[in-house]
Amino acid sequence: MPSDPLVARHVLEFPGGYTRTTGPVIGRFLSELRARRIVGVRTKEGKVLVPPLEYDPMTGEPVTGEFVEVGPAGTVTTWAFVPEPRPGHPLDRPFAWALIRLDGADTALVHAVDASDPTKVRAGMRVWPVWNDRPTGHITDIACFVPEVTEIVADVRTEYRLQAGGALRVFLRGVERGVLLGGRCDTCAKVYVPYRLTCPECGSAIPETLELPDTGTITTFAVNNLPDPRAPEVPFVSAYILLDGSDIPMIALIGDVPAHEVRQGMRVKAVWVPEHERTASMANIRWFAPTGEPDVEQP
Amino acid sequence: MRDVAIVAFAQTRHTDRDTGLTEPELIQPVIDEIKERTGLRRFGFTCSGSCDYLAGAPFSFVSALDALAAWPPISESHVEMDGAWALYEAWVRLQHGDIDSALVYGFGKSSLGDLATIMTLQLDPYYLAPLGLDQLSYAALQANAVGADRAELDEIIRRGRVDGRRNPYALDLPDPEGEDVAVRPLRKTDLPPVTDGAAAIVLATGDLASRLNPRPAYIRGIAHRTEPHYLGMRDLARSASAADAARAAGVGKGPVEVAELHARFPHEEVILREALGLPGDTVINPSGGPQAADPVMATGLIRIGEAARRIHDGAARRTVGHAAGGPCLQQNLVTVLEG
Image 1 (cartoon, helix red, strand yellow):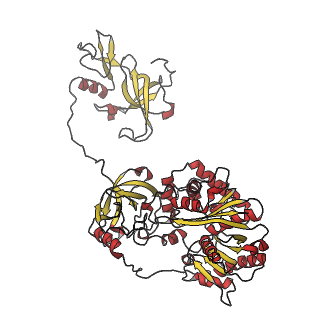
Image 2: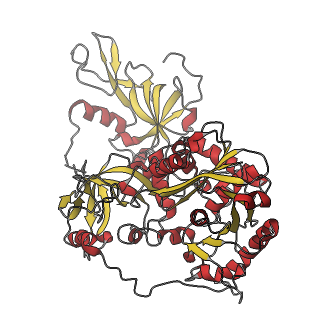
Image 3: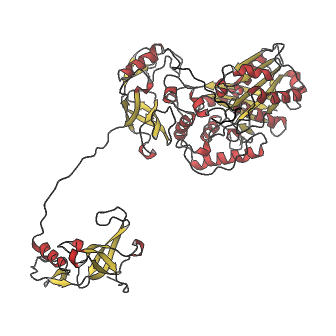
């Protein structure tokens, strides 16, 4: 409080709380809550009021005394999102207030919905109560409501051992010595890289390898904003590169250039790791970098 | 029915902070002003509206009588509601026929505590108050149920503040800026300003009315209606009770030149315009309305006073004053005034 002696703090409080009798209708509702059930009361017109009142607010008639179990799930009819909860609110993190029409009820219950941001709440959504660990017969025996289960997260993970045999082994052995190996199909007159044993178009065998230069042209590319183990800094660019003398582009990272300067037709050259670090792996090529040559118009 | 007219209206220059005046000190100048303007020192009946929780002092409304000169004993009553309901009680009292004048006043210092928390105390203590449901939260629930166009709400706020700056009694607030969320969908700029202030009205009947004011504002209709307190038991998107009160008061029986609406949040104005069936050419809240000054427990009475003032100064012939109470416009009082 301010140190000004003319300003004082004043607290209005009922120490220990203010005791109120519940009457038979609200008392029944709160007792049922303590037993983790939600009940409404039927009016003379047959409507089910939740929470129950002693009188029908529309007609003023006493209610019938017939209690009906409702919910526990319900449907949100309207809501408001609280980004900064106040002391005394049901949750101490951002949440939504909602009017919830419980299944079997004709009126809506006011309560909190545990939702971390406003995009997670909408009218019509289905919600279920979360009960307090120790119900005492109080409206807060329902700690809050949470969205109905509509999805689950399933873990998927299995491990494999992959071995480069056949054509891939030949290609990677080339990469180990700093050479990109392709192959030419004599029938189709097309050069494929990486090297493969047969032509994917006509099926002819490709018995010989063909050394290709490590320069080429970008045919298309994508700017990626999600980090990847091979490119931890975002954004990074992955591109199709048509190596000089080949007919099929291969995919590789582009580096040494800002993402927004990468373009189709740009000339690039592989950046190899130093010779003593090389292995039989594509990690030998750090990325492709621009050569500075003029762009190719129709790669 | 006896003809009852509003013959004088006075209000404080409302403040956006506590000036340190006690409630009697806040009221006294307004009472003095209205006594001076009417020349009346005593009234047939006196009724006030206030809320002890605002000052956090039980029976603070009794202390407020110190501002009145209440000795020898006066005939007096109080409502723990907006002063507009005190006016209704005074109007009923005047229908008895044995007195011909009444003093009505309302006052509130909302600066002393946290109004949002204080307003929680008016809620049902079994189902709502234990949740800590505060006035911004339940207003936001209603705003979402209405689903009004944001541009329309922005224009209501902007208009209220522009008009408020022209009103010497209201606060000088800048045009709203920013989109900070209070409780979604309500923005911080949608909230009424914390305000301290008071207002008083003198009612008179028969010859006395025209002796006290050359242009008395006659109450041609006055009615209040309520609907269920619990928010889940009514349609929050409209106000059935405001519509009922408007019908009973006869709002639609003639043109309405000016309507002063107790809309503390912009979506409430949207609801009330529809409920009262106000035509498009009715000027809404030329005083700036609650968006420009919201001395809680006087705000509704000021709406009726402002509607009367348009008739006193000859600017209008038929006006409407509206007051509301309870969460989400639970209670509505509609007054039709004619010159």
